[in-house]
Length: 296
Image 1 (cartoon, rainbow, N blue to C red):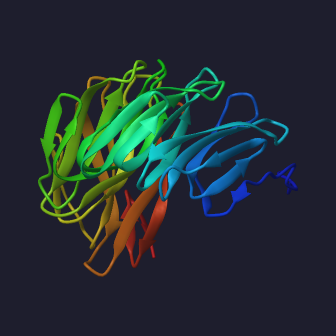
Image 2 (cartoon, helix red, strand yellow):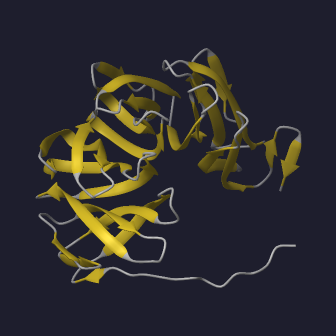
């Protein structure tokens, strides 16, 4: 029988402006890796940081006993945020978010191309940023997962034309979902899109350690293509789950959702179950079908 546990510890940050945490990951040793953004002056344990712009991204490490032992910032003169984080398997963190204008990530300086751009950066176990890479065009990331080899699998959405390393993609609808792979040295080696006549956005991603691919979830409206699979939403929005192989090909996709335009279903997060399957969570309204199960 499960028991109700009391919180073992809690720790805070704070300062003269907002300090918001968005993403958290287990560090492999009972502690936590956390990312988000802050404005103005902020304290992270014994580390004091001052944002270079309106908002800077931060990454911090909290030990298993609840102490903040390091924190590092990234950003420039505009708006820069950390959104999602994954443990790199060696005590460090893989982090994604977005930035505008010119921003510094350790010794790497990035300049956005067309408004806000997505970034992926690696922070070592001692809190040093050793590389960062960006996308181009109007692109935003929502999820990141460690690829089992020091790199990252990243998902999100883009609008219009966007570049992912040497790959250039053009959205089929107002927004398309994307999945990209970033190597352990910080190079984008492939990217793939999914979308159709309207909105398609992905929110969650997990690494399939059995086959090296990625399980991805999000939502779509209208007709959308996922590799060779074409889906049509039953409600105003439907959830999708798709599988992307280790080489960047969409292998399959499945949907869940409502029965009319007045219903909707959107997935927000996903986890791998250790056997090649996905555990997915989100929300729905009205009637929604999940395989043979109908919920109201």
